[in-house]
Length: 153
Image (tube, rainbow, N blue to C red):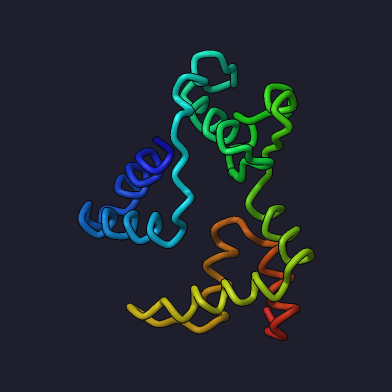
């Protein structure tokens, strides 16, 4: 359900991408992380309460997966009170990545380098990739990445 919602939004916001392209991307994502698909959460949805009822499936999947964190730009719809009983917190992607940079900078830098290597059409420089990430709301993480990589803003 989460991937359905995600890819429907991408298709709506990016008319330059085709459904076939996004379907291939989705398949590659699922294949790259074999245990990423959460099943058996649907029965939890009705018993959950969030400011936006359409987000309950996200919390239900997090509960079923024993997740500790829901990473989302949409923090207003995931307040602490309904998440606390499940020992789950909602965290902004920039805060999440910034924390990861403290915990495992080498792993994050490796992932960023892999992402850069995969950008072939068109290819990008590291600075261009970081500018894109910054424009997507990851300002503090990009500042830290630039510091670690020795790249001036």
